[in-house]
Amino acid sequence: MLRFAIALISTVTFGTLSYAQIETWKLDPPHSAAQFSVRHMGISTVRGTFTKLSGTVEYDPSEVAKSSVDVSIDAASVDSRVEMRDNDLRSDHFLDVQKYPTITFKSKRVEPAGEGKLKVTGDLTIHGVTKEAVLDVDGPSKPFKDPRGNLHMGISATTNINRMDFGVSGAPGMVGNDIGITIDAELVKPSGAPPK
Image (cartoon, rainbow, N blue to C red; front, side, top):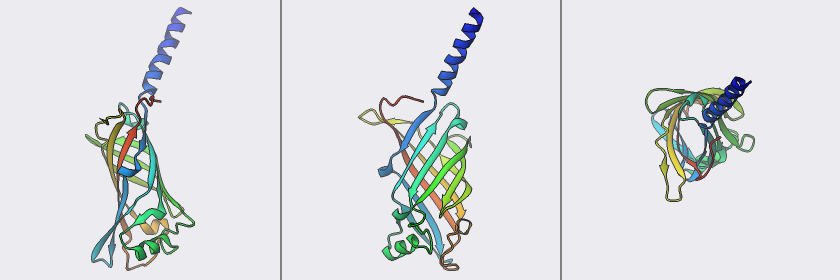
C-alpha cells in the first residue's frame, strides 16, 4: 500500500511539473502585423497589411510539440495604402468582409525545424474556406522582461498560398494568384501569470 501511495504521488508530481511547462502568451496587437504581397499584372509587387489581429500561443519550451497557436485577423483592417483598392479588397470581388469578417489560423501540429526555428501546420480559413497551411517560424526569441515585469518574446512566420484555393477570385489576370504572407508578432505573458 505504501509503495502504491509513493508511486501515485510521484506520478501526480512529475505529471504536474511536466504540464506546468506550458505557458500562455497573448499576441500584442500594437506590436504585431500580418502582411501580404502579390504580383500586379506580372510586373510589380503590391504589399499590404492587416492592422488588427489577436491570438494566443500555448508554448512549451521544453517540448514544443505540446505547443499550439490560435490567431484571428480582422479582414476589414486590410491596408494597402490606397483607399479605392482597399475598398475593392473588402468587397465581394475579393475578401467579402461583410460575409467573412475574420481570417483565422489554428494549429494542428508544432515541430522543431532547426535551431531557433519551428514548423507549424494548421487550418487557415479565408473567405469561409479552410485549407491546411504550413508556417515557417523564426523564433520564438528569448523572453525579455519589461520594467513592469511582463515577459515579451517575438516570432516571425511566413507561408505562401494560392488565393484561388480559398475562392478569392477577383481580377483574374490582373492580380497574381500566389500570395506571400508574413506574420510578425510580439507575444506577452503578464507578470504573475501562472503556467498552466
